[in-house]
Length: 252
Image 1 (cartoon, one colour):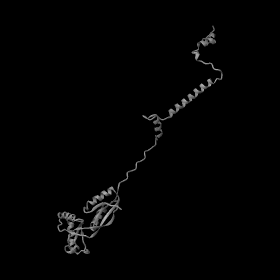
Image 2 (cartoon, rainbow, N blue to C red):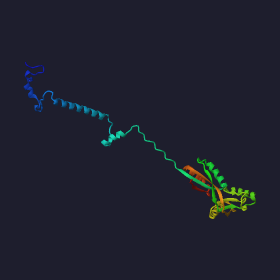
Image 3 (cartoon, one colour):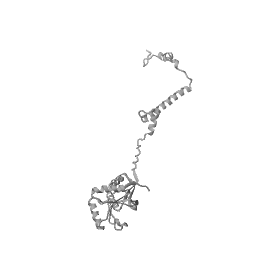
Image 4 (tube, rainbow, N blue to C red):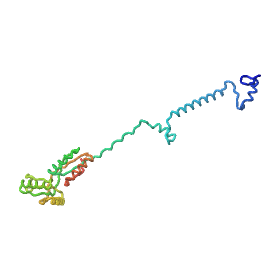
């Protein structure tokens, strides 16, 4: 028999038989040796495969795109994101301050009483005292009775009635009729003086009188500068205990 190990006969290896078994032989082109057409397609295929490998690796290493972002926005978002970035702390709001406020005008007795109550508040800001020239016009007073002894007795009686805001006019007063009398307050208008007497009568003071005055008196005022809201509130409460005094803004 003429079969080989693979069961094929010698005649099956003849060239005419192989040509008959080719598929679509018309698509084949016979090229001459060392033709450039044999080299160029192979190189192009190799370069294309290499470029595809690089693109695949770059895509695998890139971070995932942000959800909902457009393609051109995704790259920008990745560039702007900093994993360790921290928001800068916001500056604390500046506390409001009052430039200048002033309380006055106090006579000598009123000033001592005001300073005593002010010291008990222990405010962080200290006042700056200043003298104020006041053109007083009407004074509420109790006329002198038996000189100094009479003035001392009347002063003790006023304290028992709960009245602390008064001033014993000394013997050195230039006006003789006022020596050892008791001043209960000086007012710019007669109406204000009468209104104050109306407050004193229910308290038991019935001997008060009104005297017109045209002299200039020196009073004491207190200024505070650059104080905070808490200090201003404390001063407002203290001012309420001195209804005859004025609280005002100041400059300079």
